[in-house]
Image (cartoon, rainbow, N blue to C red):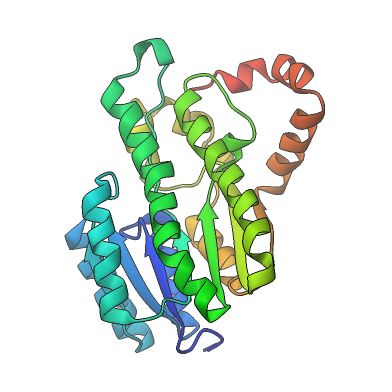
Length: 264
């Protein structure tokens, strides 16, 4: 078993399943101590037990609703009090509801912005001074290719992930002289329960089934880059190439891929 992360404490949000669960597993496999935060207590208990049994490392968990800023702030304070210095933060929590803006419910919009953007900035804002004081640390923000290429029915989700990418890029430049690494992870569709809330009809998931990423492989890829100066992780590679083409000729790409963009 590789032990590159021995003694390192890694806070992972949205850790009750999907990518977050595999992030915890791969951190533990490398000897690190995962600290998990999510809403689902039952899932967190199961994951924590599995990690501790399989890899013989501590795995802590905290019930947290990241859409509630005051409550989430209190949980972060508790984590810092109980565990001392955190070595890395993986802002993985995220959610979506795909809908046209004209038909969207305000509570869905509000929750997307609260979970995807505000909670991510909140966690970073509270932990960053601790990283800076120690002249070390790594912040990894799970964004999305949707933050680079917006499509119909994902207006708010794309806006939230665009905000994450912008925040990440600026933060990286702010702290690069202080020994703190900052990485954005821009993903295409991943085979998780994400789409149960994003698109309950199942139509979009069916349309992109053949191109979905494996959450286990995503988790492994991200964990391998902990404590490195990797600027971005873009998956899949072909979608990254598409986003670069979109930056150069957005109108042309929108016209050429109109049918694909309207699969939701």
